[in-house]
Length: 333
Image (cartoon, rainbow, N blue to C red; front, top):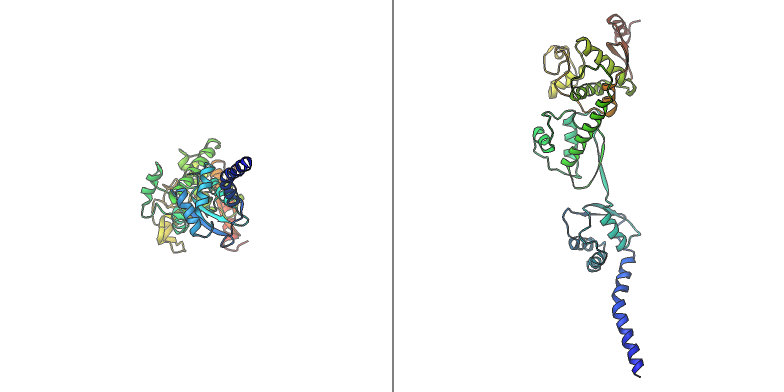
């Protein structure tokens, strides 16, 4: 009789010890009944484990928050849940959900900065993104550069055009910082491998040239040829005479039509009235334009004229150029 009582007591103790473990295991491995497919869930920066669990229950993703908190504590993952936007799909268990949240397997958003955009266009795109946290709203361009620790005083050309992926709720300042450093790195690499005898005093002057090449190029493979024309002109002291710089100098006054009066009206960016490079870049150049500016074609060309479909005819002499203008622009033979 005593042994039977002892066995019964032992069994009760085993139940008491194993019961919670079995209960938690059943919770951890049971598939969740998600309210939608997929369901989006956001973890705000600085959220505690309990706050996340509470929000998961409120969103009907978890049946109860208590077991999830206990699971997090037992697996030593308290405080490891990462902020961001998550997309949840079946099959998903509470254990799988915890793993996803602590790995930071977030839904990424993207913003594409297009080659040849002005900084103003980039800033408009950033400001219009609903997925970014707008910390730079109301800052002047100069204040924004100061926040980045940039030494330059003018933002044009300083940000690398690319597609940037980020978590929902990320700071727009962080995106600007990534784009700024990306341009610095690519410009430094291109400068290190530059051709000999280029007429640039600094990497910044090469960046200015790259921006002009970016705006003048209609067909990608012509970039090194266009670069050669402008480099040759700089070496000879000829004016660059490039329309995109004039248009940039007009700013918001440009209505889509470049007139003769615009070409003869002096501004710091009018390369018809002023020799040398303009004071700043005129756009955000891509990597190919940077390479072209620092490794132009070995060519004697000094002129080019549009032939149509984005292509140009290149000439080494004014006489040849005038014939090309007559042929391609005036319909002559």
